[in-house]
Image (cartoon, each protein chain N blue to C red):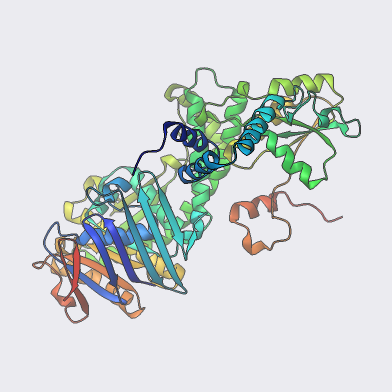
Length: 200
Length: 358
């Protein structure tokens, strides 16, 4: 079989580095692109460049935005007293889809992970502390994952952020909505039990 | 529960193998290095996703090939198909045609207990082997154990990485300590419950197969005596010198005592060998008790090492497996197979990576 032209091989290599795209998909996309209408490919290239040029991280909360501070930070209708701490900028999108949270956000940019060389200084914690000084924040809601690193980071934040007249809370974890007990694993169930609440 | 079909591709010395197995005794006969043990290894791999020879995937690929495939049809309470492919670049595992996302959904489809020469390390080797013995048994009987153990290991490794740093943030360390303690306490509790249930089974098995009247006792010696959180805090000075976590379930011991004396130190070679088999028999009995059906027994040549009297002690276990519609796979050479089983066995001849009836 004749080898692919070098440029195509380079394109496959570049595509293969993208998340969720394995060697086969990379090859398929690359072969599609080099045979497609030049205008369509130019549009795609322009869209990628444009998006990358315009999108930045919000200087305040760390969300993905075109203008800093972002729409979430500058929205006067959102409760400035509430800040929800998430791991990644994309977590904001998940929370926004639920449409129940009306406060502001703060993206940490990771979680403490000694095995991956991520230390507290590598996260946007100092930025959060500055916000606590500057903004009228009364509650910090920690919405990190419940793996070992997520739990340890939550605990760390609770200790480090503790100050008078500030409430630090953590989102509840337990049973997924609309499912029975039989589908929950033991760890989830024991946490759901720990986090039980009185029925009002 | 039994393995009804086994399919191998480029596994060890088998280029292709498709074979049906009925319940009952299967005796795999053949000269050395023909591939008898490889069959047992494949069956054990289906059950635990590990090799009992303690090797990684690369060693199980047939020489000069890219990857191996191991597939099976298992008949137990339901029927299941498993497929496993391994190569350096790609590995996949599927159950009933669907990729396996959580190991807990997969483990338990096939339960096995293996008897092999490496078992001797359970008695003579370091504590790690004995902890793994308990862990495997708990994984096979308690669905939440594996995630718990993984959580503990993750917290332990994170914590150790922090302790190695010159100036780790004490609050970050505390965060991982909490995770370590909450998973660790649960592990200690489950191991503490397991050992007293296992000990009488092992004592009975030992008495049945041994020539001596010495009493066997298994004792759990947890690294944490009472309160993990308190003891972890107390261990801080030692932690600082060693730069790692010095107490916790990863330092637990399981003591094997013959007449109240350590079998590893004071036992004879024969006693140690008998003891290793007794532990495995106890494991099989325990699994049978919990699940109501016996695990598939994989016996690799150990019968040959035992004299007729000790071999006789194993027979009740094998017969019970037979009556309960279980399955036993046993490897042996033509000279040393246990003739007393002649009436009930299904004989197979293993030669150069092929399997034939009779």
